[in-house]
Every structure is written in C-alpha cells, then in structure tokens.
Image 1 (cartoon, rainbow, N blue to C red):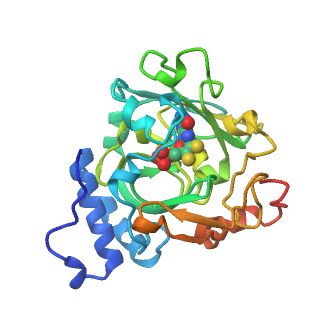
Image 2 (image 1 turned 90 degrees about the vertical axis):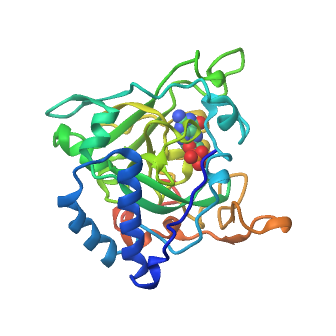
Amino acid sequence: MAVYRPPHIPSSEITPKDVWLNRRSILKSAAALGATTLAAPLAACGQEAATGTSFTTDEPITPYQDVTGYNNFYEFGLQKTDPARHSGDFNPRPWTIEVDGLVNNPRTFDIDELIASQMIEERIYRMRCVEAWSMVIPWNGFPLSALLNQVEPLSSAKYVAFETVVRPEEMPGQRGFFQPLPWPYREGLRLDEAMHPLTILSTGVFGETLPNQNGAPVRLVVPWKYGFKGIKSIVKITLTEQEPPSTWNVSAPSEYGFYANVNPDVPHPRWSQATERRIGTGGFFGADRRETLMFNGYADEVADMYADMDLTRYF
Ligand code: MTE
C-alpha cells in the first residue's frame, strides 16, 4: 500500500503555510494525475488559496490507512473494511460519465480526457459522516461547476441528479439474496449547491489516483453535507427541474433528508449530531470527540444558500 510522504524540504519555514499547501497540491496532483497544461490557471489558483482558507485546513490530516480502510461503499459490503477488501475486481478504466437532461449541450465525458482537461487541485476538507465520525481528507479534483458549465444548463434546470455504476459481476454487495439498498445508488443536489466552488468531483486522494474503495474513478465531495451525499463511481449526471431521488432519503425518509447539511442542532432521530469522533486520533483511549460545527465549519461560505429555509424541516 502506498504511503503518503510530506515533502523532504520543510518549505513551510520559508513560505506562508497556505501558499505552501497550495503549491504542494498543484505539484503533487499534476505529477500523480498527469495534468499537463497548468501554467495559466496556476497564478489564479495561487491567489485564491492565499486569500481564502476554506479550500484547506490546518487540522491534522487523517492517516492514509483510515481514509482508505474505513469506508462506506455498500456495493462492496456493509462493514467499514469491506470496500477495501472486496473492491479488487472492480475496474475503473475505461470509464465515461454521461451528462444529460436540461442542458444545451449533452455530452459523454471520458474520465481520462476530463482529468487532462481540468486543473486538478488539492482540497483538504473536513468530512463529517451522519454516523457521527469525521476525517480530514486531502482530495484531488476539480470543481463540479467546471463540468456543468461545459454542458450549459438551461434556465429550467434546478437540480442535479447523480448515479453510480451497477456491476454485480465486479461489486459483491450487488449480488446475492440480500440487497441492502436499491441500485443504482443515487444522489442529488440543488443547482446552486452543485455550482458552489467548494463542491468538487474528486479523482484522487493523497496525490494518488482514487482507490476503488474511495469511489474510483470519480466521486462527489460536498464538505458541508453528511458523507452519504458523496456518491462514488459516478456514471451519469442529469440536470432536472424536480428534486431527484437520493438513495438514503428514499430508503429511510424520516432519517435522511434530501439536504443532509451537517447541523449539530438537528439530531438524527436515533442519535445526536452535536459531537463527532475524529477517526485516527486518540490512540488507546479511542478517538477524540469534538463539537460538530454548523455546516461542518463551512457556514461562512454556504449559509446564505439556506437563509430562508427551516433547517429542521429541510434536514
Ligand atoms: N456511494 C455509493 N455509490 N455507495 C455507497 O454506499 N456510501 C456513502 C457515500 N457514497 C456510498 C456512496 C456514505 S454512507 C458515505 S459516509 C461516504 O460515501 C463515505 O465515503 P468514504 O468511504 O470515502 O469516506
């Protein structure tokens, strides 16, 4: 298993940390993912990271073995260790994503062409699961808005629907008598949420190509929402006028809402959301427990989108 290594030279000593993180991200991402033409967007990205910190965090990064070994991906089984153990037969190449619905320019994107055409950045995001645990993950990816702009959404488009691949022959959790969820796994966002600069399609972690268990070759990352919104191994994206179905909302509507914004004030019907366990910390005595922040700490960036909504009703 590959191990994440920080740079040998502690350039943080001579460079402000946010600039260093951003430079590290671009270099690592470009090397790992084969992005070639980075020169033009580099300056713009550097400025963005230097002035705003929502794309990164100083909190310690969760160890690689937890990020890639403690997963939810029911297509490969129900236990947290199942995705890493049972996704070896899954083949994420070649891969296409079909984008259709209420758009001017429906298209099918080849994942490698898509990666080569985008500036792949690193975003170190806090991630908070509805099961009340959290991680800090260095994602590599690009804004979902970059893909949506290419298909030109119509003014009637209000939502974005996502679908995961169905491949029982490669995904053991989709075989057999007991099926925990209806397939394909589906998710949805409102169009403004999908276009928000924090929302990314991830194609890597720790500067490496995304492992199968984390959603290879491409998955959604929305850091102010509970982890289940982060649909993995996406094959289809459809722009719609009506709110699309999302798997957990359809399966247990009283427990999982469409919005799924991280909110310490709105408990899950069976447990509190006020605190969280930070995976990979705490050693023998268990993981550190900390207070959960409104919108997972991204309120300054996203709260405006929900200003007029009753968040206990639209949970
Ligand atoms: N996507 C698919 N296709 N299938 C799944 O079972 N699980 C979701 C989400 N995306 C899931 C999925 C849940 S419940 C969580 S918490 C996150 O993926 C976990 O992402 P991670 O394993 O990368 O932390």
